[in-house]
Length: 292
Image 1 (cartoon, rainbow, N blue to C red):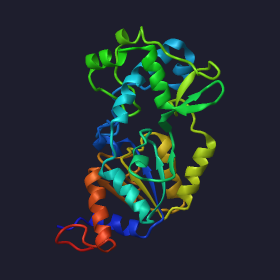
Image 2 (image 1 turned 45 degrees about the vertical axis):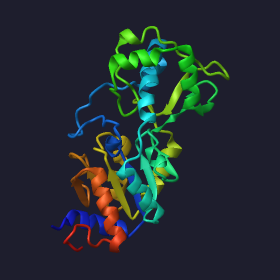
Image 3 (image 1 turned 45 degrees about the horizontal axis):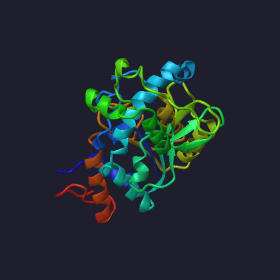
Image 4 (image 1 turned 120 degrees about the vertical axis):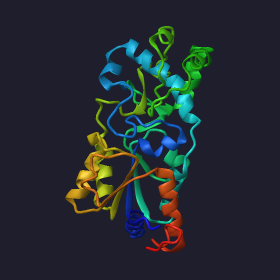
């Protein structure tokens, strides 16, 4: 049975110069939940805001306690078929750029290169005082030393409930005795090298994403509802420039009516089938028994 939507998508990708814009939905098959679920609307929890993080030590204590526990779950996640398909399309020269809204590093773990992390990465920590960036593993070791046994005790109590940004759902009763640490170089406040809600993405990073989009032959959105403007603005720019937009996502998105093609489908299986079809003969024979 033919899948005309998948055949059209393959034809667009086969022309090359594809820029991928990925969201949390691409990582759900790796065990990392999507903030908004299948509808793209409902948010399961309120994330830490930049203003709250800067506002007081108790907010930072709550964030680092939850993140200390949740980050461990993210480090155990592995790339899925969707991440591997994007990396392979890049290797074949069909994908010219990757913009991800995710902070989990799974594109890179799958072998993708020169990924623009729009919202930063949880594998790094930045000091708000001196600006020094250090590996997250170094901070993790310091937090373990400052809180011996805490992660094992609280982890057993709360289970594996983790948000896409590595924020575990830990009650305040487990947070009050958690000890945070400051920058080892200047004593300043440490923050994960990610963009919090209420914080602006650095302008040079945004400009790089706009430049990639403007040079694209196709903007391919993978696993994003595009509900917030942070990602949607690149779809809006592609539309302004007459660049086709293709979307693969489970559930509706903000840009479905603007897209050249929009597929409501699981990411891993869809991209795996797409990749196999392109490997046989361009966009042909994506579905057994069918021909593009």
